[in-house]
Amino acid sequence: MLTAGYLMYGDNVGSQITLNLPSGEVSAKVAIYSTLFIRITKYALVITPVATALERELSANYRNWGPLRMLIRIGLLTSTAIVAHVFPYFENLMAIIGSIFVVAASFVLPCLCYLKIAVSLNGWSSKLMGVVAIIVFGSVAGILGTYSAFVDLLQNV
Image: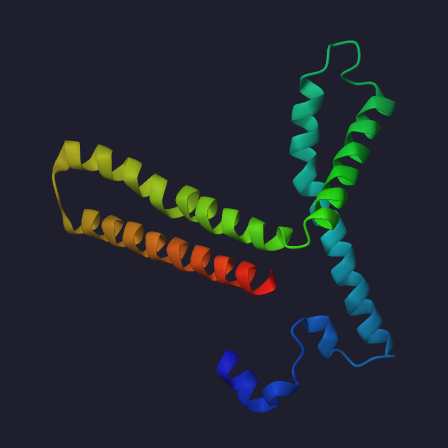
């Protein structure tokens, strides 16, 4: 699909999908504002568990007090904005962390746990070879993702 898109449009395609939309049209504005809305709501969904964990550490008297809960969320938003402003390559750092931990949590660790249990019970089988293949694939994907994020970080610095 990517090849077909490149063959159809060539180098005239912008890096972000919103840069490729026709300017001045209502449909383009709706698409851009929808994209912004999705990002804003996604941030709220991601930051809510962090805020909830912080609120649990409060004493029982202040745990459900609305102004303090709002202050915690505003503090998290402000600190995130400050970090993004002070460290302009923060996204590359998050890509590095994401490629390491997402691959580890999604592919490698569950398969290693299953492998430890299954080998001790049944011995080796073709199913376990598939699990080993998933571990190898996940490890290679994690290494390539981390390498790619490091290269992007070094190019931007």
